[in-house]
Length: 141
Image (cartoon, rainbow, N blue to C red):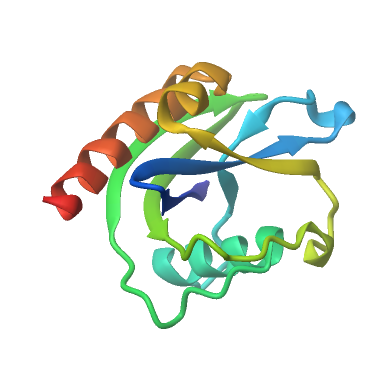
């Protein structure tokens, strides 16, 4: 099954900040980036943009879309392949968690990169964020 992950960042006072969402207690109550399944017939970029909009209210249709990393994992006897995208937003970007049809998050917070890395639960998510931070640093040069 194909999935997408969206790493959202902003530059605030010269520092990179990463958006993380906190899952509901029934899903573990941990911090994560925006993630979701690719719908049948949907491109990876379209899936990333849709998930980002559904889970945060962020509209990225005017921005570029490029996969920077991918990984595979198994869960409940299913095989998944997750494609990672990075999106930059303005410092004032509003976040709205109420648009998701399946409420799965109880909150969000902007974290400095080191704190976000520390809070992520899964090794693959940490690797994805490390790759995203490399990509972000290239764009800032």
